[in-house]
Picture 1 (cartoon, rainbow, N blue to C red):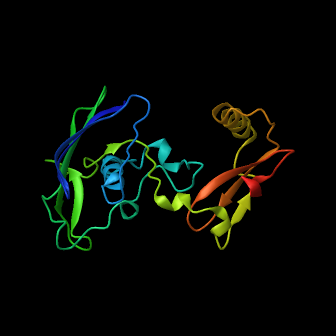
Picture 2 (cartoon, rainbow, N blue to C red):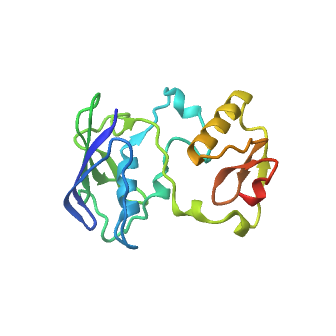
Picture 3 (cartoon, one colour):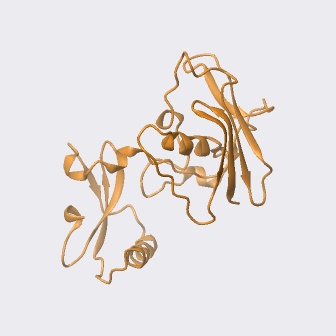
Length: 203
């Protein structure tokens, strides 16, 4: 299942906009304030993981979970973000019909929630699919973090072996990796590698 097309009927500055999605990679570029993060939030807000989904208990290497939190994507305005003021449709290549999401009234703060249009039953509001939403906090250098926690035991031997292969294949390097250390801070979780030439502090 792949996303092929995004139609935003209305969402803040977006009005009747269409976006085609690449089969392997989609690059979104623009100046600050042009709603790049909003677009990513719209896409990931369409998905969640149901309690019975086995991926719900899994953890990505970047930390967190495969469910993207609403608070990490949107800060809603109590004045301008109103029920029925948002609607978008995501299209897929196979397996799922076009899926339309709209904002509906919610009791509490925030006063709106995003839900599948026309559906009101529990469990019908989203598509069950793992997602990761990486905010700009991931760009904070480790040297600027006040406190970090390291762990060399997160990956199993099998996972470490696969990580080493993928790391060198993607980065086109041949230096053998001696260890991979999980580095956790307030803003992010990452993995640093150590070799005979450098360690994770120099990554």
